[in-house]
Length: 327
Image 1 (cartoon, rainbow, N blue to C red):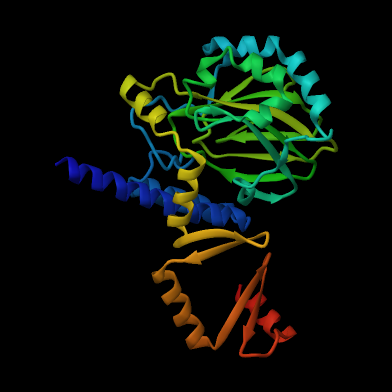
Image 2 (cartoon, one colour; image 1 turned 180 degrees about the vertical axis):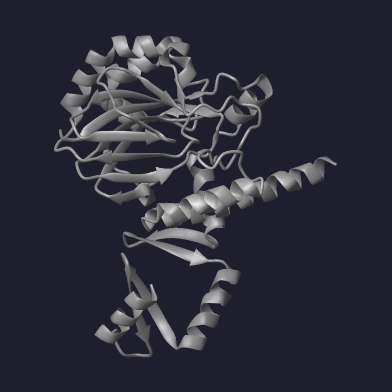
């Protein structure tokens, strides 16, 4: 019986993943109506309870509120009191030598346009020493809040968004974690939407929301926005669920293994400064079949364009045009 329940849970997680990928693809294509249709269909099929809340790992029974009252959490007042010290340190570090806030790698698929930079002070259950060395005041303040460090499975991140950036609608991976924003530098022209509610950051005032609900960011101003992002466990989470979440915090190595498995790769290595991936047997056979049938000997993906190579001849403008139409 336990095995059956485990199998059902695994299958549901896979269904949520594929539905989530499809919804994300529609959003990236700037077709929100199609994304909404998919989300509503998923709800009809029992995948989620609400089309706006699409956690891939859903813990039933937790109060589902897109936005929470910051006063529920003692440490929001503490963070707000220390806002001037944190902001002063951040202003000294940004754009200075050894600035650790760099363009995001993990979340770059969410950027429809613009630039989103991040630096993690805390993740996978441990402080990131190199980043914390650049923000010692901020790290010292946060060390006094176990709810966002040792008792949290999430991250503490310095987040910087440039003008013109659109972070497309998306949902966080679990409803067991709430997200806290401490706005540090907030120019005009910014909007945060959580579910159907449009919100605005106020410097030094915390926002708390459930990021398993659909949310997006638009920056139509002229200066960078900087926010300190923190995660804390949902207050309704019981002891067993809390322990399981904290015990399952993944290391960088575990995340890399999951990435390889998910993308059908058996090995990755660096060679002369280049990252080289080696597909597993199933992926190699599938690609070999496609290439044999089409006569393609190689392909290059360049943004929205694909360049085909056939035989020994180099790619021609016709190949490129054909690829663009096909893509």
